[in-house]
Image (cartoon, rainbow, N blue to C red; front, top):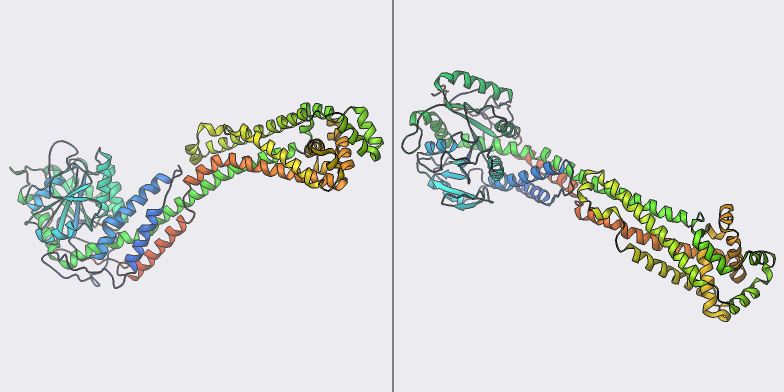
Length: 620
């Protein structure tokens, strides 16, 4: 740990040699009209632009544990690409940006004012003091920062502002060219917007000057940010402020030990004693001189500035792929969750369809009111026996029966409608309940639920009634089509068609092709045999099978459509919240392009180790 002047630049704590240090021409001011690309080709900028688009398109709408962290990481990555990586990559020789960050009341603004020898940033006893960031630079460097390429989301202003979305630009002739200070909001501010902005600004820093005090250097929040900065390979320097003279050795040693434990032992540490401020609110020159001299040497050394920029830039680039990978994994979880929610809904409504099919097959539709009305329609049990004994003469008897007296078709039709309606409403209600329960047990599903989804839709009874009427009309059309060239239909006209259609409907409620089973015969008291005999006498055996099969298929198709519409109440919610299936693949592909371009650029190797003049020790 160096205390005072020495600056050791490393990548993630790994030392490197002086050889291979990038050469950046020294200059006395910023040339706003001359852009210098960071690399010899456009692969890295193009790859970063593609990554920025992929991150911007990523959405994490489902309420999963990974969604909020993914949104936060995505926002931070997008900000860093916009605020720092893209503009800095385009201009390696732009002024070095030192972001001064730290905890509330650490004295950041006072330190900045003292370093530039002017009151450029407000100080005060009220917290939080710094509501909008203040950037201080040499007048020669002002054009670069006013252009808005760095931190483009902040509106430039020349005056103090309470709006955290503004960046106050101040020039200070005492600050050497090539170096700028940005006084950031408190990293532990009680104002959410201030904390978020502080993190955004720190991610845009070439060098983070972390300011803490003897009373607060062990706080958790700063160490979380320091750990994150170290993981990105950012260059960090620290100021331990307001240290009582009697505690200097003990506090400095303890902080140095903590830094070493966090792999930050190479970060320069400056210890500032507890002291007074002058009439302008500035610290005495003797207190700030070591730090001011260190920054002056850094500003004057083009190679040193370049090394700082390249280390921070290279570390930020290297950290992109694992961060984007976490976004891709979160996107995969979103798609998987949406699929799981859809599966639960489809399973519930598939079960409903199976229940309907079983209900049309197991004879339950032939019970109760339908059975009673069917017996009234077809005749007495003596008539059944007559049909079974004299099928050969059935046609004439049926013609005579149909022509002499009207069968109670309306009552049978109503009973069929009521029984079928009860079945459909019941299975729809059960499916809705199962789907609701399945979603409620899933974190993403619970957030999408509405109480109305626990039941079938309010308009379902009306739609069921319409479905049954349409199906009944379809059955009559089948009968007309099947008997169109038969004299039976011609002689008996509409009544025969209606009556025969009802018999076909009864056939649909028995087993496949209207072949009776023991259960059906017992349940229907012979009605199945009688109905089959009627149809066979009129149309023939194969026609019975064909009509019953077609009517059944038509009914099941209509019911599937009906239940699909009920399921859509759920599925449209996941569809509206479902991220694009290609999101994860596009994020991974974009990150791989950036990583490949980085490895081919000058940012893949270890950063050169820089050293300032020999350490002059701690400066009280």
